[in-house]
Each structure stands twice: as C-alpha cells, then as structure tokens.
Length: 346
Image 1 (cartoon, one colour):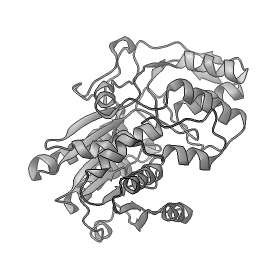
Image 2 (cartoon, one colour):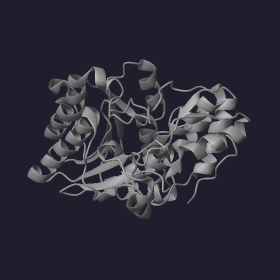
Image 3 (tube, one colour):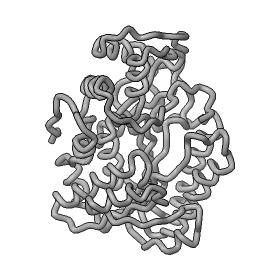
Image 4 (cartoon, one colour):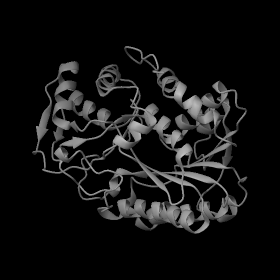
C-alpha cells in the first residue's frame, strides 16, 4: 500500500507522522517477526523515526511487541519524546561494557550507533565507536539477530554511467571514517561467522529528511545565493521513511554469513539538475563552481528496491517538499551532509 502523500508539509509534527506511518508490506513483514526489538543508538538522526515506525507497525499488526530505544540521551527531551510514543528507553553509553551488560537480551536488534562528523579530528574515538562498540554489543547478545547500519562510503568512486556499485562490489574505503565503517561490518561478520548470529548489513546512501540531507544542502545554497560545488556531480537519495522501512524489513533477511543490502533511491541524481530545479521552484538562479568529476560516491540499490519494494516517495516530490520547507524558513538540524567531500575526511 502506498501512503497518501500531502502536497506540502508544514510542520515537524506532520513530517514525523508521515515518516513513521507504516505501509501494509511493513506491517505484514513485522507481524512474522518473533520477539521484541531494540534500537541501539536510537538518539541519532534516523533512530527516533525508525523506532516509532516499528512501534506503529507492530500495533497495526496486532502484535504486543516492545520497542526499546538505547542511547546516552544527552538531551532528556529526546528521551521524553520517544516515551510519549510508546517507545521504552534505556540510558547506556555503548563504550562502557558494564552498562551494556545491564541491557536485556532482546532477539531483534537494529544497530545504529556510530560516529562520522568530527571523526577527522578524533580518529581514536571514531575507531572506538565504529569498531570497538560493535564488538562489545555483539559479544553481549549471543543469540540475537542484527541489522547493522553501514554506509555507501565503503565503496570506491565510480562513473555515474556504471549505475553505481552493487553489493558484490569489493569495498575500497577512502579515509579513516570509511575504513572504520568497513571495520564495523567486519566485526559483525566475525561474530556471525564464528557464532552464527544472523546479520544483515544495510549500506545507506543517503537518507532525506526535510530537516537535513543532500536535497536540503543544495536547496539552502540556492536560496541563500551560495555557490554549489559540482565536483561530486552525482548522488543517491532516499526518503527517510522509505529507508527506515527497508532497514526494518532487513530483519527478515538476516543470515550467517551476513546478507548485504544497499539502501538508496533507484536513480542516480545530477547535482546540477537538482540545483536547477530548486532554482526554478525558489525563483533563484543557482551559482555553480567547479566541474563534475568523472566519478562519484554512489550505490546501486536495485537488490533492496526489488526485494523490499521501491520507495513510496519520489525524488520529484522530495524536491517540492524541500523547496517549500526552505522558502518558509522551517527548522533544520543544522547538520550539513558534506556530500561534496572527496578526500574521505569528515
């Protein structure tokens, strides 16, 4: 079932309600899942909406399942907001093995913890978060299935005409952030191969929420008259609600050794054309600098879109929503994606 989409989105409440509205296929998929669900690293950009989406899907399926969100919750309001929607919360610093030891054993886990931005200035912490924490967590849950969030950053740069790397493409991470993300994958793979944990690795590239994401980055530059770097000339994008739906459906496809899924939109998008379309909608002339390189950081998500269902929200609709959001001065998370980065340093 496709979700009925509004012409525009006017508030954060409306945005989050739409992102957490389950489709029939997700309700049916989670209805077959045995046991409760825990989201580790729920306090990030995607975690709250993924947890709420899962809870609503369980409720619509008539399943009395617990959804537990684990985070440090440095902002108590985030914890309160989750609990108001029926999500149980637990405070835990995942770098602390004693605190992890207090977590209940839950059969289904989505691992969303990690570090990206600021990692260039804190490489030791970056490696600890992206490789040590997965080891602590996997060690503590010997009988659980995991969906481990990863990133398309682990792939080599490829020509847009190639369609982007598939799950069979050999990783070739550039820079320590991407190397540590591949390390995260290898830790989960190690426990899956040696202990039999069913694992699915979800390589995301990139999620779109009107408060952050590649489309917002481009739209804001057009709106504010700032130059848009064209060197990274092509990108992938997927509505966060669709990304969360596909990530949750990965729970039914965990395996040992791990299964791998690229989570991205079906199209390879031109940064220049995106900016030109925002220019038309915002009645602003985009300013460009540089020229498109022959390669870009891309992912081919044909496998996931075929297995889990194509995105419900088109890129055209996302552009319309984002243009309205920007022109109305709606709130943002003030967290640029740095999608233009080509040296691997975040």
